[in-house]
Length: 576
Image 1 (spheres, rainbow, N blue to C red):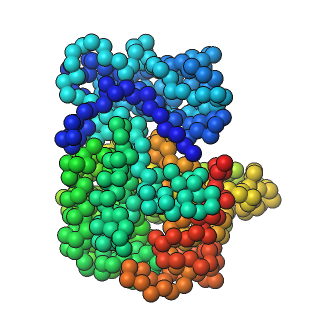
Image 2: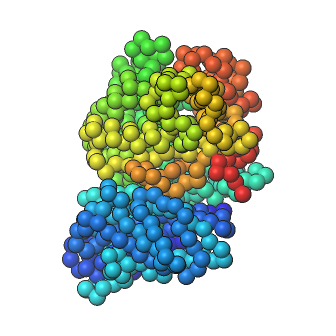
Image 3: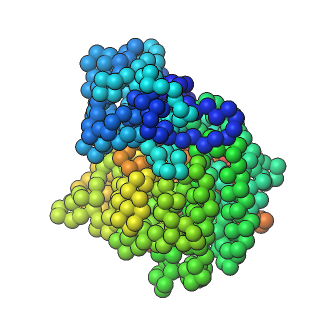
């Protein structure tokens, strides 16, 4: 079970007195002078002999071109390895210095880094920190706080948003999912993990079949929040003509129902999220998964094209819908929009990669939206692509043949989600998005552990034996997406794990089905997709391979106990 602790002193918190005032960065003057620097040290995971931690440093003094943060442990803790900074340790004293790319800290600017450590006995948070010799988290006596507060998660933009909403924050644990997970044998090992709340139809806003609605979740998040920061993760998912290439996740709105999407779905969500009662929450939205990329890959006479996708490209309602959602939700200061950016096995090819970023820019500047309404992008949502292929890289060759020529990679530019997400971030910036955008990666089902996990590269007999023998992702084909056999829970949710990555998240709640394995009558607008049928021999989108789907699956979004058990069995890192 993960434990979270914080070293952010209460003096840095904004006390709103129940007024619902949004958390704002301190302005220059007395508030900045009073607290010269702030450090938020959070233990993300603790397994008794080791732990991972995330640290956010905020500079309230003069701008810096380099920095050095120091602390001392009271116990036996040792830093083993880290990311986004350089680490050294002498006895109990730890020194952390910047990398070349994050040495600049403006007044009010922040940076985050993380590390893995070991210990025996207790694992207490350090009592004090110094930034370039100045003690942090302590009022320097420069005056009263002037009503300002620390954002606890990076620099802010004029709206008051922090650079990375996950930094320095807990993330909402959905009690409905948590109860389902805990009821499974062994499920209490992960039932306290945060997962996304899916708003996948209009009725979900008020709650379906007596379940929790949006306000219920936000109220529960306020209770979980306590005195710290809290992220709530929402999936906004009900576009007209939704999922034009996947019948299992078709939606309730027809291709031309753009006005209903705006008035009956987005507007009510925006009304609730803008309630001052919820202004202290950091609300992360995943905007319309599997929508815009379909307009790039599944239209215009391509082998993978569908009439439904051609219709949505022609009527423009995916672009209009996403733009409208970004504009309305982006106007709320504590909402952070992340647009779904597919996954490497969908968009990693040259003819998909750049055009997708350009299409996102078009959507983000339509219907009153601007690039300022986009906090970043999320990849691998509800998918299975491996986070890191540890046994080969895109630059490897076998007997002079590039791995790009293997059947598995098939000329893709990327072999895993981390490399794809980091590259897509750069592509999006080149397309006109802000340079401070971040990425999320859904790691809920991409662990691929268990006895089938390769322990090293494959044989170098050929490029195919090399890739096949070493690849972590054990799907039959990278295009397979429905209830994949052999999958496991991936990296646990954590903030700022790698450069350019705001967080690893479990946006798809593990144990919720991708689609029914046979036709099921329903009132949810969900069709039967043969890719969820384990007997299906495939189509052009998976190069006519078997689907790799588990049998006896229920409708998408419904609880699938057998899959949840398999995900736990094949978790990587393994569950204890």
